[in-house]
Image 1: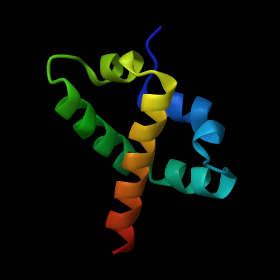
Image 2: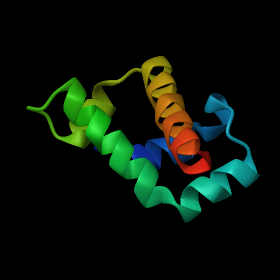
Image 3: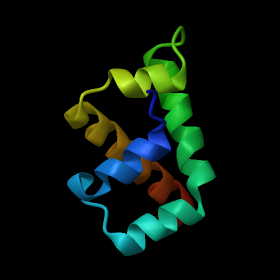
Length: 79
């Protein structure tokens, strides 16, 4: 079964180090995070769907990818 970025984030959030208040904030503005994750997935492999790119990532790579997405959006919205 294919897992979306949002679903995998939910499953891996504690391993990534995202506590409840930050996770609630991310969920409130999830469309911004998903858009950035989608954009980055297309940069990785334009011939695959976003879900295929996400599913091809091992947990360590997904965690690093997700931290990058979150950090980018946080910097963008807090500047």
